[in-house]
Image 1 (cartoon, rainbow, N blue to C red):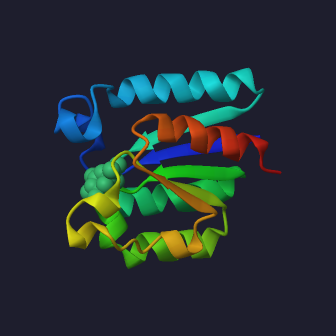
Image 2: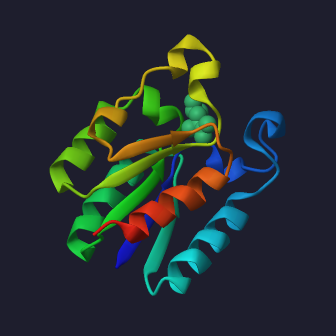
Length: 143
Ligand code: DQA
């Protein structure tokens, strides 16, 4: 099984960025744990973070060519703005789980809508960085 973990804009700053909202774990911590989690299940996991919408879209297209089975993505701010990211998922038809570290529904109104949720397998939000672990566990189990 081949998984891909994607993180969107500003998540490279995880650990120092608004720690009261996003916690103290860094993106490197999250990616290391996710890689070990996949390996323990006999799967491979690639990680990619970008602050650029087009780079994420290109990575999703490449995932199709690589035969990626499932994607776990925290689209970050692009969640609330990007029809392009949604269309990329519709185009490649790779199943994905949407993760948000914070509970977006407790926050500003503009964070309440996601362009991705309607086409995701499911969404995890508000469970901190543990959400990545739960999403990867699900993606590993899903056939
Ligand atoms: C986020 C929530 C988004 O609203 C925000 O723009 C982010 C992170 C989260 O993980 O809680 O960058 O996706």
